[in-house]
Length: 330
Ligand code: A3P
Image 1 (cartoon, rainbow, N blue to C red):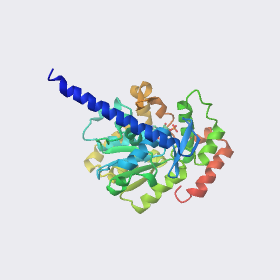
Image 2 (cartoon, protein in one colour; image 1 turned 60 degrees about the vertical axis):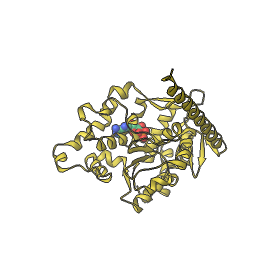
Image 3 (cartoon, rainbow, N blue to C red; image 1 turned 135 degrees about the vertical axis):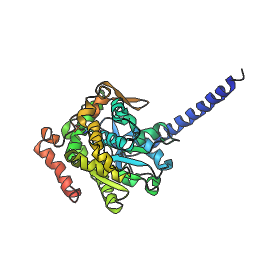
Image 4 (cartoon, protein in one colour; image 1 turned 45 degrees about the horizontal axis):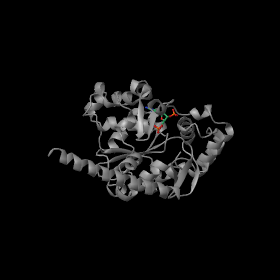
């Protein structure tokens, strides 16, 4: 009987924690329901909070993080807008940071989706409100102006990936169309362009998201790195080297001579990752309530695919915003 007591205590403790968690979840869900809302992409609505639009679950996570997240000086945050290269850069940063730990022939990325190797902070916080992941590489889509204060105060590094907004939009439209529940009407391309250009997309307005990190990268170049998807595509060796230096994991000249940078790039390439069994047939548990097929994160991995989808008018509409809002950085 005696040895049953600790586990009984433990389970009642767990029950209390579970109840507290449900209560917090309920309160946050009620709070989010009072915020201004607009038509959603993969969910019925997006919700407005501190200048940006969010889906319900990540927003609950963000509010939790804003209250209590404690960053560490050694943390590296990968920040992206959805569909601007998160999967690829998770793989690259994970491989660079762990290259002395794992052999390239027996590497976690060969059997796990990059999203399983690098936690997505908002969803993690939504599910684990009182904890932080005990890892130093973390990813988020949070806009700069709403980041938890400790991230800026801690001295940690931020890598921000910028992708051409038309390519990001097209990738987002494909992705959200796949995730959108069958009960909702299909996501009409014309409507989605309107929503994107009015700023009402997940983590939008996209221009304010980009500008926040771009300005921060100019003000604090040692803390915030602004890297372009297209540049990494065009010259992966140069940009992987810069990435490694920025996060204080520089490649040594021996490593360069041994071709380690090539190995990192090859392992993380679209061709390699998208053809792995785990990414062809596996699924990624985005939260306890949602699973996404891993192959959804790998479509074409190219630049310029927008030309095959957008009409001239649609492209001009997005270009108009780029010209007006992002002209200094493109
Ligand atoms: P496309 O839909 O244009 O193909 P995210 O990872 O932020 O969700 O972004 C997904 C986009 O990145 C998709 O773009 C996907 O194909 C592309 N992608 C995923 N893995 C990649 C890789 N290893 N290299 C280049 N692009 C990649």
